[in-house]
Length: 362
Image (cartoon, rainbow, N blue to C red; front, side, top):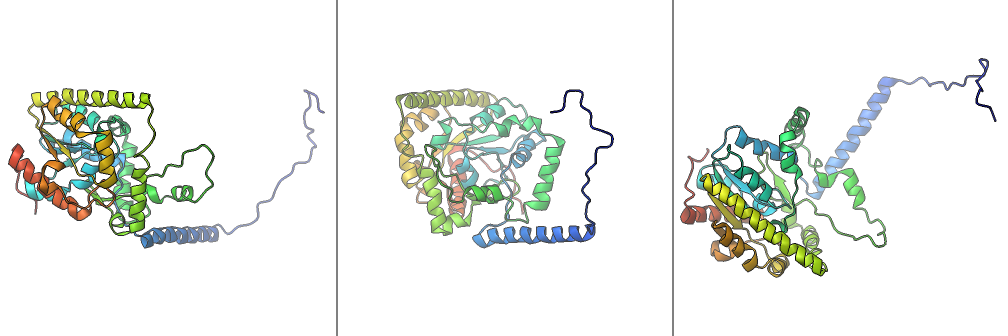
């Protein structure tokens, strides 16, 4: 074994591997052709499955809508909530009924309270606020904090990337969606289940979105029974999870915390003359029964309105908001979302004085 003072001899042989001569131009052409074949095959695969180009519901698209308030649209109606407000309130129908196209800031799967609190403290906002209440999300208090925490930290490169994505990619390619990524599809293969690891199904794509976040249910959810049943099974896996006493106590604490935060936010908004209306969109079947059991109206919705003093529109109280089609129990079909929005706007006008803001756009 060589000692610490060992130095290789100057005469030691040097081994080199010769690089074979390559036609670089031909290699580039072959690589490009293979890429284009793979690219086209992946796009055609998803289109044949029913996918279509849509704008992505990304942080960047939410930031664009949020900036409208700070960039001069101070007096607009703003929509907050989770996915039911995002899917069920149609901006085209709202514009026809109330003469303005609201700013859609609902975020699926998360309570809207942090955004409501931020708007209550934001002097730039002077408009009207509609806040959706999906009981399991609103009163559970789960938050996607990244949407609003990163808003003030968005970099120029992130804005540029969002512009490129929205103008050059999203309107043209069906595969450009998180649900259709190669690694996502790879993870959905029938791999053997590891012992002791819960096998929870992940939410699949449910919606189609426009550039201003106007969103409606994807037609595959409505028209493909197998896919619709899968979407239902994703929700159903959460309905009967075992709960320990500590879980029940934590749920009660969260409920009280969410209502208390709502009281404070509504009071600040009221001081600034900003009207707030809470809305409970429809749910159906097993999802509705789960909500009634774990988030009964008396201790959640009724308590929220009583303590905040804010008005509310609950779908159970209005015949025109009932009997609508909810294919996967939680969100309205595209056609019935239009009907729901028309009826909701009529109630806002009739009972809450939400008058038309301007003439509807051509």
